[in-house]
Image: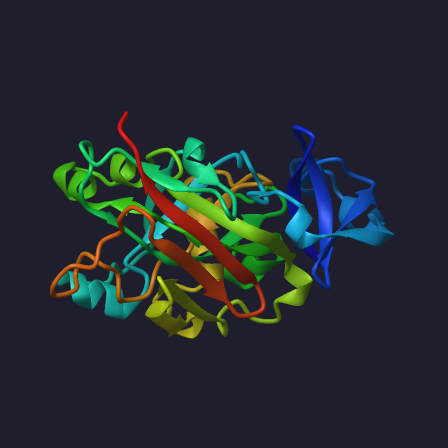
Length: 277
């Protein structure tokens, strides 16, 4: 099932995306309620008639996730282009939830504050039930679904700090969507083609099979350190081809269109806007 959150006259509303239409549902009002209520997905009723997607304003599938947990340097070619070793264990950092926006929303920043804004295509995992000290062999059973995520990064801020959170967490720097695809529709999260397309040109392309640490390992690793809650989002890392390590660098600017595509998951489209604070 492809689940979406959309703006219904100022109210965040749950819907199902089918054949280019958004269908109303009964059984849960919001994505958070659906995820946090055991058995709610099985009881969800979908209206037969829908509204054309073009007439609907989509929000992030989870507009305010509990946490956004990120994994760094999880594709070997990305570690190679950075000139670093791939971590023996998943490298964990956080993005603030205030950075989350949906498809079609602008990625914005003040060029006087950061001059090195970059893209990162990522598969995002949405946790469906409380996980603590989970074994890797059971980890995927804790997944509610998947979506596309752009881990937008202010490189000058990121590399200027001792840690990455500030440079990763500017408002609008975590586009997600367009839909949350339930786990039953993703047979294997380690066999998905993923790409980033900038202004019509493919700049990142890989398959999740080349992740250094699998989705299952990431969930197990995180759950040993802290409790994962229903509605937590885990961004699983980006392939090689990011802008900052190109020669010359290929950084985002005003008016650029960034598209994150993951086969079977969806196509997340956002445009960049610079604005003075």
